[in-house]
Image 1 (tube, helix red, strand yellow):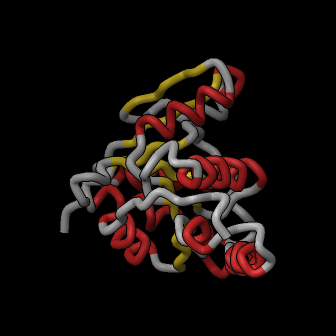
Image 2: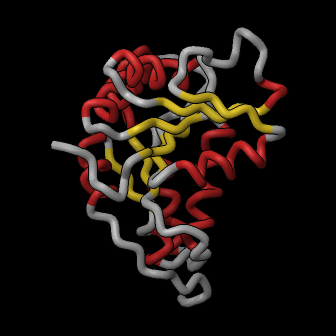
Amino acid sequence: MGGHPLVRRICVFCGSSSGADPGYAAEAAAVGRLLAERGIGVVYGGGQVGLMGVVADAALEAGGEVTGVIPKHLMREEIAHHHLTELHVVDDMHERKATMARLSDGFLALPGGAGTLEELFEVWTWAQLGLHAKPVGMLDVRGYYTKLAEFLDHMVGEGFLNLPSRDLVTVSPDPEVLLTAFAEHSYTPVDKWAG
């Protein structure tokens, strides 16, 4: 089964660490392979460390296209991945995120830390504001995002987030489910200020 014609490249946000459980790296590798097998290119932060490097290596080993975007200050030999299909070196973190967004047709968060959440929340906010119409998802590996998904529902219940905005983020433990949701994604502008 090939990739959806509108989803040629997916931006993967994930940790520059591998996490405490080896299951995180195993799932990251599986995602990299799956994207390559589907003919979907990977866009990511350009590092060779942590889950970032695992996703990139697995996609490359499976014959996939991997595009990295890394700011100059992270280009040190031990951080930048030098065997990618393409590596964009940009001036700063703001340009990095804008470039990754421009190159991507969807956004997928794997487990990660503050930077991963910041990237995820920014693209979700951009969708909420109508700045893009691309799908956004969280891969709930080993329950990593379960509490965050519950908190998003809590935000709706407390009146700080409306349901259409909440529904802009798909959460699943199964990458196949997320890719299907991405392929079937249709964007309806959200009235952020509606209750």
